[in-house]
Image (cartoon, rainbow over all chains, first blue to last red):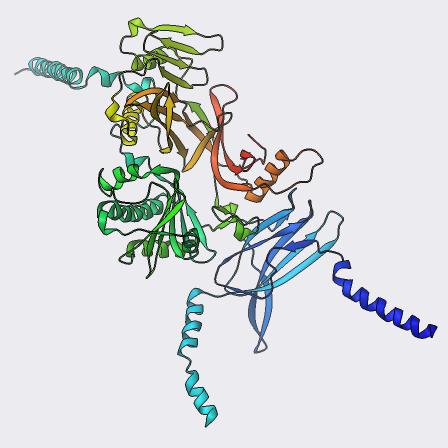
Length: 158
Length: 464
């Protein structure tokens, strides 16, 4: 009886802890206004902004995907897209708010945000951003409009 | 003919020629042109015929490329041409509106429609003040045209481009937005916007787009590397150390200088007065104040806004002229000694950026009060940039400038909170501390709910 009770108590405790897990986890060093989760855009410039503790050092870097032929095979790697005239680093001021503009290259970009708080703890946030030209988007929309769904349905029925 | 005779004839010829040229010089150039007004006011634009359209200018033009892509144009050396071309296109539309009269059907729309127009490809023109519509009628309609337009004043307008083009007018006084659907696609503006987009100009962002607040009424840049603003040395327009120049200046204000007394104050200011009609005070910093004792004698038929502007411009023209890059900053009705009149504030810019004076943020470079067509008050405080040096340093980011304000408004040990920013733009501040040569440096002008702040855009210090 006691054994059963302990087991139930143990399982309940685990369940309760699981429920509160997100709340108990240490908060991130940086809280982005717009999380970078596979963004697709036609704007060459993008804002990275958010909140962090005062005196947190933040570095924002952009890497663009480049394709190379190695032994006849296409290999992809990341190359830093140096933001001319723009400093990569910043220190968060008394409001705790920060904002930086980054420029993207056409194609797939990887945005890397490295933050170090005054206690020396580090956090790295990465996200993919795909920049397409307005023409590419227009063409894609046109292709979609030209796509004859009726013919396809007819073929399937046949 | 011997050599001596030839020499004599040449000599006689030269004497006659010099006589003729001297006569030409003395008779053809009037004496008042030889003793120029520049002796009193050095360096200002001496243009005489002022055109109202030269002063009622947009503070800026925002070009919206669609979505979150905007750029802001000011009338500076790098964007001046495209600014002028776009404003010319907008002016043509305004001419159509004011001359078109009854054929123009305005529809009152919600503010949301104005905001939606900014998200599309459009041109946004923002004036410095909600100027009375009669001023625009004068500038674009030649006076009486367009009297049936429902708008009382214009603070800004949006020209929405594309197939469903429209003009939205923000009636600053009424707080309403009016819409007029454009009959045709404005190809010139379309082309200018496309060309500008190809040039990849500096992008501007609203505070909402940045994530700072929900405000999207104005835009700030985040790529400060594109700005290359020099630090200048400024000098007052009037050399207050030169008595002859000050006396010459005073003589412009009084018809009979033999009746004028000159008083030197302890602080170095000079007062000129005839004890009957007016007083002129020039202080050591170059600030000039002119006051008329009696308001009588004005023309009651000239109490309207355009007559006030006309009287003010004529007076300024005769009393120092307009500095370069000047603009009408504000015009409001005032009551002076029970007389209703108008106060006109003019300011000027350095490379498109407005000037602020340390210790005088609320005052403009030239202020004129006109009562019934008569100038009764006139203040003038103008500096000229004489030298400029390039600074190899990036300008402060807007967020950093806001941080400076936060430090200033939060008490010691208090929690730092974001100030509610109502407007924010770059300008130049003249630090009038010291003597003769003052520093003119780029600043962030930040208008918050707590008041206006000036932050040195290079050093990050709170100036005012």
